[in-house]
Length: 240
Image (cartoon, rainbow, N blue to C red; front, side, top):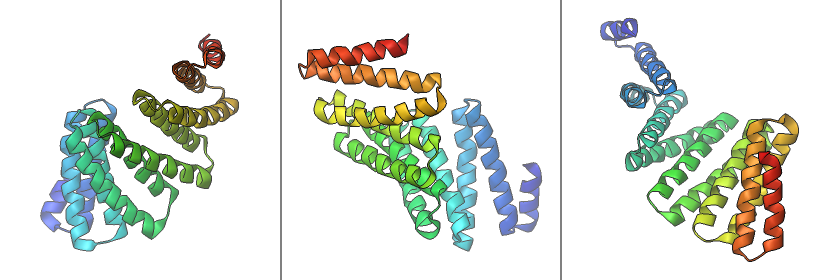
């Protein structure tokens, strides 16, 4: 990093600025991976300042993409640090940026990052008890992940789609919207069944068991005792 800083101090070129900003970003990534979130935020802030300067100078799609991803990284760190309102501000900027980048390139990776931002916004709004807005962003995430899965067909995309359905189902269940919750749980169930059939992983089996249990709870709340029992039995088989 010192080399890039010295190079930028001497030359002040756009390339040197990008190199220095990338160095800050890499340190931020490393610290975040080590769980040193507060320290990572400091480096991501420096990254952000550098990429903002780069975008202001060049206005290119690449510069916008780098700046937008810096907003996203800041949002993630602030969310982990429970600085929810600040995280929302950065996610909003990330969403605006990713929308512009996606309009220009329409790549699956950009769509996935935009959708990640929707999902994280939903989670932050849920923490702040902004119920209608949280549901809206979770629904946007589901729509986005469905597009990502339709375009890529990967197991990871299916997992993200299924997880989003399960998350919204659980939130609706907590809000007492039991019938709506069951619909989302069923969609999540279909996805995780497919994942388990393909991979056979313990994580997929665990997700299935949790979903069976949640649907059982919903059926119980609706007074459908026999159906609830069937789902609880499936959950039990999975947990074994």
